[in-house]
Length: 594
Image (tube, rainbow, N blue to C red; front, side, top):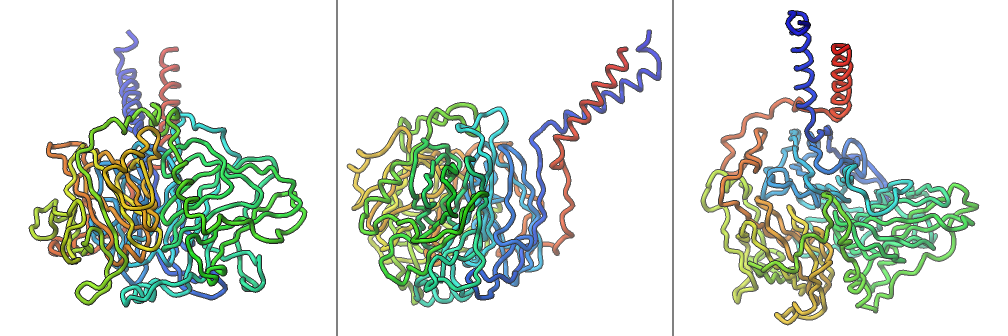
């Protein structure tokens, strides 16, 4: 028979090897990035200053991936101080080792590199990365993250003609090192020197307010087309109102959740928040149009200079933008922004990372296992130093990251005793951690006793924003909770003199950072960690990485900096390789059969 010849046996073995290789590459793809973080010179407001660039870019490159892809980012720190990147909104399922905050990672020393390796498991949406240490975000180092739907799951709107990322941020000419010294001494940040679009200063809409010669952002579009705008507030502490002259904003997604599609003329975007809008170019292009980001919840006329202005330029535009900027909301209508926030709801019929509708998770029917009423206060002196607190505790970052201390059973690094409400005792500095119940369902109420809008972020999760109101939260406040289509996101605002309530399912084991996104509040101690431990052995939970950097009580385990990581595993072209191998396999089989 034909199959008994040695030649044919070898041939079949070769085909079998090809098949096994193709199957081995059939897993989720890998993408690789090699980033150098360094100081570069820029003049966003017409004055030369040092900013933090990623690969020489400010803002940094966009990380563009698809649900379930594996991401490998080798980061070389060319700054003169330690550095970490955190991935705002990426959940790192069962892998808080990659979160890039002081509770999970030792900082990357100056001159060293470290490789992040994580999977964007079961996520879609618009996020961003940024430096998590020592006020560095105030000087840049941030960039966008896009997580696309898999091909098998439809997006709940027509494919846009373009995809545009916009970073809006308050900006100071002072360096991050000067700003943090001011904060430590009790000096407030004061009025920003400007507001940037994608690291660029404002268009000269007013000769009395904007210097001549400033480079500004131009967004080029074609008439009649629809674009997806992903807008991130990556700033320091200022809520910004985003609007485009004569154009509607159709909200479609925020921080990984597809939303009920509604038209807005403007949107308040608070520090750390991300939104996606569809914008149709339906105007007559008699001129260019203003894109504006202006400060909210400020009354001083000095803030008028801190207005960011970019230009929307139609390809058939007849002239430059001119005239007054589109009006912002009335600062004295305090309910406007809260009502707008309440109007943002989840599209419960749309699929997202998974094909089942987003409304399949009936969060309003789940029994709450833990309740934390977390109250903040303005900066206060504790032991002679200015600090901010949550429930009377200002977080003290230990020299040994919490996750490493937990891994190696090092006593005395932290205590699982964060109170579930403000205690009747003096404020203190401590390393107190929330003891989360694995697969529990936690209710957190943020009560803002400060005079400014604060926004709070939880790593590792998307939580449901179920309620917010002015005044003091009470048990009766649950009567106004949205228990059906509250939006799931990772950063929520809390208005001054008001509260915001969230619900979160603690199904992601790890050590997770809960923090103020406003840098001044965060830097002075307004953060806490949530420890979520699976009591059973979970073989799928990611173990201690081989390339872990050790510090603090574990410094003796640290070896000299290794050579730059040689990437291994499937490459970004793994899909292509797989397809080629399968094609060869089919051709060879066809030849063999014939």
